[in-house]
Image (tube, rainbow, N blue to C red):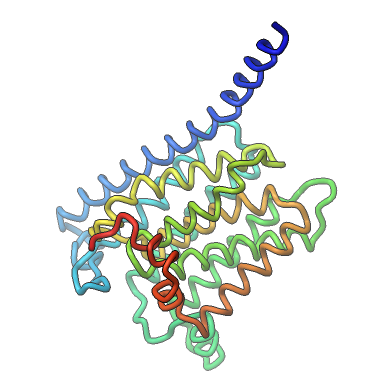
Length: 299
């Protein structure tokens, strides 16, 4: 009898722990779908500045047109869901909403007005050294600053030091960039983000609300995955940077000091490696990665 009672209590505890995550994911999905529908409706009208469909269209790797509206829809949907998700501490909520909105805004700026002459972190820094401020440079500075502010907000515990805050900021900004580096094929960035966040979701977080932040961010992304895989829309810098920043904020809030160190180091290494290595070529030449990358995508 006692074993049955303990089993029922354990089951009830699992349900209690899972419900907030499911609610956060549902809020993220609903908000992103609403934002995407509203964005398409506004742009197809074609009236006024910023509402011309041609401004938001890009040519993908097949030479076909896709819309960038998925990106701002993700950023807006994720920010709204994070603002509404219950059980998230005030500082973590402020940080997550802030990075989703700011990364999305700086990403939109680079998406719409970037000329593509300078690519990669090194290209933008070289331009800055010559006195040229590129749109990518503005984005790097903006997201970097937002990441540092968010890091300072989420690492205000009794044992947190200035180093912890800086490492948290680097983790958030580097995560935003890492996800963006993968947004070169349909669905790749969202799949990678979901895989990277899964281990943390399967274990109990050390910080209340971090799991809810991850679920809201992933829920918003997964809700837009069908259009992404079908090559009707793409995250662009706005969506990919925002997705990475949200997940980076959850990671920075829940990680131990050692966890912050290896996350910041690993994500920085990914950024540096991207200057020398084509991730698309690596994926294409690695059968398991190639199969995962093509899962759900058009033939």
